[in-house]
Every structure is written in structure tokens, then in C-alpha cells.
Length: 347
Image 1 (cartoon, rainbow, N blue to C red):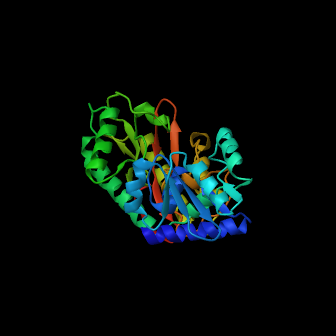
Image 2: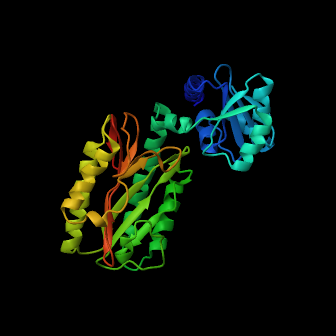
Image 3: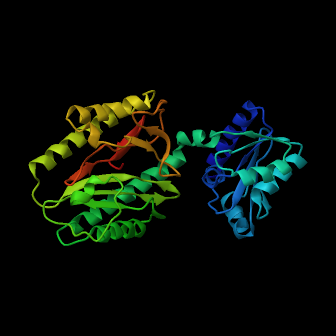
């Protein structure tokens, strides 16, 4: 993925120039990965407004840099951010934009001793990450495909006598067996009344006939995250369960239909939320409709009743409405879509 990373750094360099900075110091590790391909626990990247970028990491990752991003100059130092701040000043780049949302007060004080002038970069890299390129879309598709196959593999295990924890472990094991790096996040398996808790942690509760079971899980593949939500019934479905499921399914479809380029995020949320509210369950849908996915499981844009901004093409987002009834259970369904991207049945 060398060429995509080079193009991403060029886009950031243009933003640095627009901010009248000499260079950007990128220290958020997921942003360093986005710009270089390097996945590490210690790295920083200096992106000048003009000229080649410089990567810094410690000796544990120097060999990896040669394999992943050989086109980059690599400085080997443990104090990566400070080393690059010194390098910037040495090269005559005194106005250094930094990720203020990522840097601690203590780290800022240390940087200020090295660089004469610091200015906030803002969430510039995160904004670049919103719109996915072909390489990212390919990785997201595979993450979703693995998640789909894992759901199909585990579905026969959902029967009376099996615990939530056993289902969660099975999902995560199967995703890795199918090629995932690891689970994208801690899997949710919520059965019966536990389904009324949106972020329930799997327990030793035994699935019983008549339960609704909500599963929220996903695979991470090549660093990119899938996020699927499904609700299934154990045995015969009660009338109220079918009614709630059908409502959430219609609301999800309305949200997917509304998620198009130029759509306001609040409008997309309202397409699903208003339908649920009109059915008398407005207070039973307590979270936002969805969020962006990529190198992080929750990325911009966020879609909620209080969110602003517009969707763009090639911005994958989840659409995952839910209804949660205290003491009875809940239903949540999730899939992802992306403006001009074909829908996938994976949230």
C-alpha cells in the first residue's frame, strides 16, 4: 500500500501549507499508521509542507519500517516526538503543527522546549481518514466478509443451554480462524432481559427458549474494523418480539436509504429515529444511529440527533437502530453503507 500512503501524506502536506505551518508532527499512532502503514506502539511522523516526510520509531520497529514503508527516512529514537521536533528545527522548520487532542500537557511542555512555535493541527488527519480510498475499501470489505461468515458459522450454536459467554468466545475464535487479525472490539452477546442493555457484557446466563439474543461483533482485518449487529430468536417468537423486530428492521432500512452523499447526519438519524418514536418507542432508542468505521471502530462522522455535518461518497458508516425494553429484552440491527458504495449486510 505504498502509493496510497504517499498520496495521503501529500494531502496532509497541503493542509499543513494551508495552515501556514512549516510541518506537522503526527503522534496519534492510528494516524501514523494511516499515513505510513506502520503499526507500532511507539512512532511519530513529521510531514513538512514541502519536502519528504520523516518517520521516527525505536529499534524494535526499525526492521518493520524497511518492509512496510521503505520509501521513508527513518530516525531510530525512543523519544520519537521529541526527536522529530528537534529534526524540524534543525531543518529550519520552526512553525510546528501538532495534534493537540493527542498530546498531554507534559508532552506539550517537552515539545515547547524543542520547537520555537507550536500551533494546533486540529483533527486534520482524522478528517482525511473519513473518505476511504480503494485500498481501504478492499480491507473493509474483507473484514465484513469474515464477519458475515463467522455469524453463519456460529448461528447453529444458538440454542437453549448455551451461555452468552460461550457464544461470544465462539464468534471471536471463528473470526480469527477465518483470517481476522483479531476481533474489532469486545463482542456483545445479550440474551433475554440482558438485551435491554445496549452495551451488555456477555455473562454465564444460559440461553432459553423464547429469548431474543442480540449479538454485536466484528472482525479486524488489515487494521480495518467491521461492526455487525444481529438479533435472533430462540424458539417460538412472541407477538411483541416480532413487532419490535419488524419496527427496527424498517427503521434500519429507512436509515440506509437516507445515508447518501450530501445528506445531513442529523437527517439520516431522524429517518430511523422518527419511525421508532412514532411507534411509541422514542425513549427506548437511547443511542446514535451510527458512526464511521475504518482504522478505528468509531470514526467520524457520528450520526445522532444532536450531530451536525454531511455525509460524503466513500464514507462508510454503520446504520444500527435499536429498541430496548427494560426487563424484557431488545432488538438492534446493524449494517454498513457508504454513499456510492454497494451495501453490505454487515453493520
